Length: 125
Image 1 (cartoon, rainbow, N blue to C red):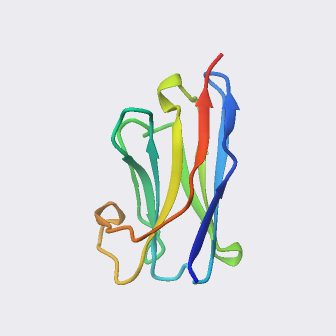
Image 2: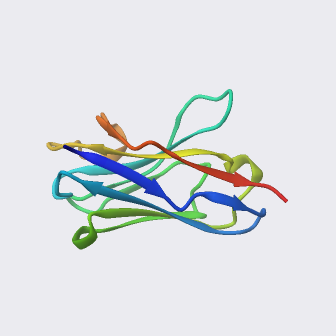
Image 3: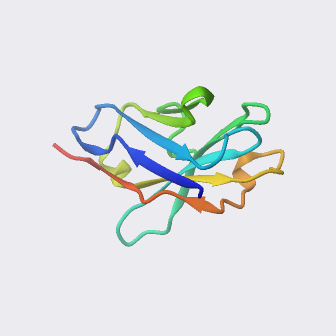
């Protein structure tokens, strides 16, 4: 069955970096859109980045643009979120998700049907 497992979260000081990984099993990336979402306590879930395996197009929310990058390794069936210049407001549980084919022209459109369990990111001094 299709499974997504996030890793790489933790505690980091403001200005620091983390790289989240999302390992997929039970399906091959080809044709999927892969996204990263986050949810902070008391706030709605926010879509922050995604990548389409159809054409490698990407999307970044304004809140992370210029600080986060997304990439994928098809051979490892893994998608990464590199987070730099982290701020306390980046503190949240981060989830990866998969949108099965056929995907929209924009990976931000979704819908994302498959979700990982989440990994906690805490930015604090």
